[in-house]
Image (spheres, rainbow, N blue to C red):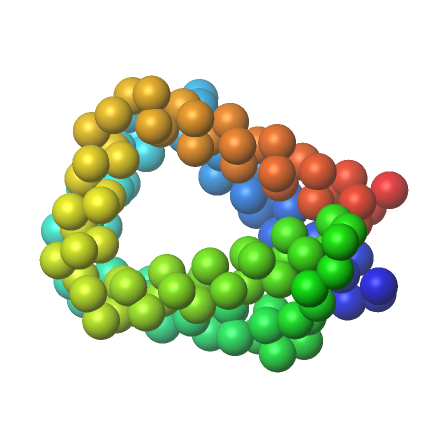
Length: 127
């Protein structure tokens, strides 16, 4: 449980801030996404970082339980998959990113889910 709380304290606030950025500054988020998607080198580096973070989570917290810590495990596995996609399939990543950033609704839904999920994890971690 200590590992779950520690990781929740790390990723909860991070996810909240990412979600708030999408909700409060959607144009800034779109501009950053366009710059990111235009750079295959940056995408590769982000893929390495995502995969490394995901592997760190999965190697310390691969808990498949019917309780809130499973969210952290799923986050770890999704980070690994995201890293693989960015590193190995940049054209697919670009296409998916452009579609998401092109939709105002998608950006708001993703931002809202991030705020709720990150808020929940931060709450669990800190309180």
